[in-house]
Image (cartoon, rainbow, N blue to C red; front, side, top):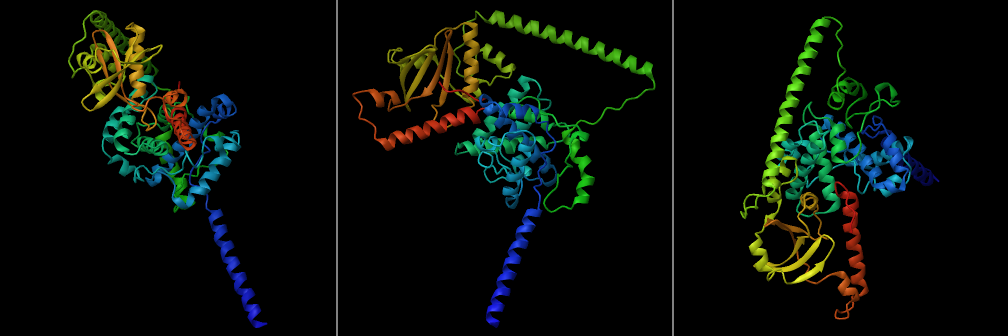
Length: 456
């Protein structure tokens, strides 16, 4: 009887201890604060089945800005592992309370693709990201403000080049996580950086704005796990300094001085606009003069119009890809005789170099519109890095011709293997593997490209 009573007491003590630990975990709130955003545009996008990718980018932006605000206090690229599940649940509930449909967390991959802790190749803090190779180039290219398209594009291109050199294994989740870690690092680099403008650029969404201070019903919870509530209240103004513009001071005295100052500013702006207009006219004149000039055959410097596009913040092709000469391509393709495919945008030839075969795509026309499309295609292809996509190896701009050089698929196309009588039929497990790989590539194009690309 005594043994039974002692056993019952031991079991009760164990149960109380387990329940107490459970209550302690529940009592710990997620340190991320999602009460600041205006969810109107996000809720509208998430309610439309045709705008799911926009919905996911909004959700990713909200979480990333919240982590950036949290990192202002802790220096960490996310919450500790013990808070991971708590924060994921808190984020999901907060989004639903502000009008985001419950299924949005599922199809956007909250917890799988949208994380609350960014670990980029072993780097878990802002200081480690700042010390990573070539991050200084990203800081130089992402100077605020990023509200213009050209500045935003230059910042994103610099970040893509940085990630391409940093990440050895080009995995979708790793690429997205390191991009978010770079965002958090940039958002914490001084008073001149605005996390809201940066998020609008990084995640390709419309302007992200915070709610007015008196419109937010929930108090700010921008706390580190180990801090107490009272210090957090005193730190709140300091933390908001990075993410909100200080209120303008209105001075009612010295009205004459104010009017005179406004007049001087207006005059200065007018003179500056006249100077910019003159420079644009001069630049346009140079473009018209060089339009009929034969393109140089140098393999070192790009065509002058390529440099002009570079001034508009297109990626300079010679900075990312190898440049081929027309003579070398003609010799490698046997005078462009080995045709692989004819398409609406050009003809694809098979060519042989010293290090293997390549596929050479010749653009059909050389109109001004086709040149713009050529530069834009070069820029977009430079952003694609995936093992299931054919990689762009180089280009050629010569003799008023435009060529794109891709890696060559030695085994032929999937169409040949499925329908050609000369090919051995594929086994079912091989077909399933191909379908999975194609799905991975499509997921990368639809959700991880910036901007998202639709496959043809």
